[in-house]
Structure formats: structure tokens, C-alpha cells
Length: 327
Image (cartoon, rainbow, N blue to C red; front, side, top):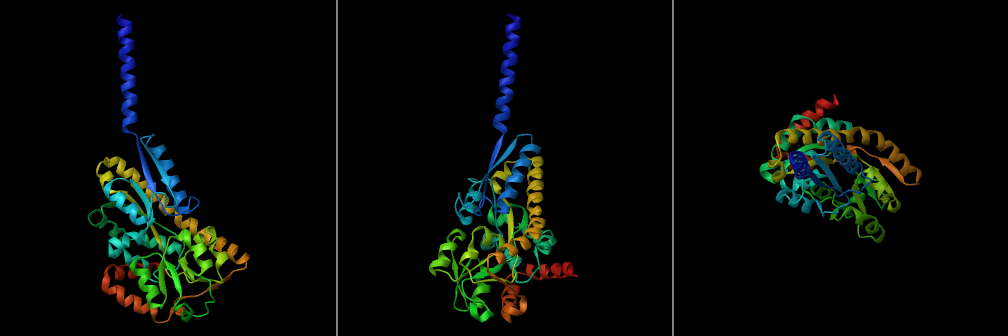
């Protein structure tokens, strides 16, 4: 009888232990708007794998790419309510809520993705993250990069005047809206997944994008010119719901932040290596890739600068840090 009692006690203890472990395990749902093959999605998946290993199964990450959970605006709302745990999203959406983030999109702030990665880890960009809990209800875990922005056009683009009056698909947020307004273009927001058909039927004449999206969504098949202007960087930001963060222990917070930053940082080297290969593939398909610099845009860049220097003092700090990186 005593042996039976001891056995039952041991069984109940083991059951309670497993129940406790199961109850404490947390599957973090992470949303993105980019396709499953995109580098941002791959970074999110790698982060989830390492988090599960490092936390010994306490945390796992389920990744939902391609806008499965809605637009970035919708995902941000879900983060604010705690219905979504994490997201890797364009910093553009955050700039719609916290205007200072718009300074990160200053034309020709950096020359390439390597400088972009360095600047995003600098004091001005990192300081912006501290605004997020109070102003957006989310916690900024770190930044990564996408390729530099360029224009893919279904019309010959020999000068900036050719852009005037054209319908250009953009990500709708103030820095880019101001940029294309100054160029005289009709900025046309739409989901990136709709652009392929929109270029074919004339709904848009061009698109502001990067080489990776142009290649993976086959947008080059609808183009006459890829204008490789590299006119802006386009950061991704790792976010966690402020509500979920508040329920997370300090050691777990440190681990999640560390791994999110690590895998977002890895994008810099990845894009630095892949951009040349992607460009070569596009050129091999018969599409003209034209290299242009700041001079292509004439006085439009200074006009943009004058507008945004008044909107946010962070721009001056970013320009100063970027100048130091370029030396």
C-alpha cells in the first residue's frame, strides 16, 4: 500500500510538472507582409528557431508571411491590443504613427545597405525606438534593412521630367509621399502583390521598390526601365506588443531582444551580397538597368530636405552620423 501511494504521488508530481511546463510554454505569433521566400521572413524564422532552442522550448514562434494577418496597419492594431505578439514590418508604418521615424527615409542619407545597417545601429536611430511604447503601444526590438529603393518603370526614364504626371505605386507614408509629390508624380498606394497586374493594365506606370521585390514578384517582366537610383534606405523594424512585453520576465525580454536584433542585423550582409546577383539576373532577362545618382533629381532633394528639417530635428542628427560613416 505504501509503495502504491509513493508511486501515485510520484505520478501526480510528474503530471503536475509537465502541466506546469506546458502552461508556461508560449507560442509567439509573428506577422509580415512580405512573401515567405523574402529575406525578412527567413530572418524571422531563424530567430524563432534559435529562440526555441535557447529558451529550451519555453518559447516558439509561428511566422505568418504574405499579409496573412492583414495589412501592416492592421497588424499594428493587433500588436497594440495584444492579439498579435510580434511583427517584422516596414518602418514606414511606424512613421505614420511616430513622425520622427520619417527622417530615416531621407533621400541619399546613406549610399548602400552597409551604411544603412551602421546608421540604424547608431544613437539617433536607436533613440527613436524609445518613443514607441508611449506613442504606438509597441516595443522596438531592433532594425534590419531591405535593398535600397529604386524605380521600376513601364516607360522610358531618361530624365526626372519623365516621372512627372506618372502614376507611381508607393508605400503610403509622408516621406515617400512628399518625395514623389515633388517629382510631380501621382503617388498611388496599393498592396505590392497587386502591382504586377497593375503595371500590365496601366493602373500604375511604375513602382518604388527594391531589387529583391522586383525579382521575386517578377515585376521586371512588366518594365521598360529599372532606374537604380538607390535614393532611400527602407528599414524593417522588429516589434513586440507592449501588452505582451509587460507580461514577459526580464530575462526572457533580454533573450527575445538579443535574438531579434541578431537576426535583423544579419540582413545587412545578406543584402550586400545578393543585390549584385539580383541586378545581374534582371539585366540577363533583357531589362535595362540605368544607374543614376542625386544629380538626376536636381533641386527636388533640397526641397524635400527643407520640408523635413522643419518636421523633425532627428534628421539633422542622422545626417551628421551618416556623414561620419561616409568618411
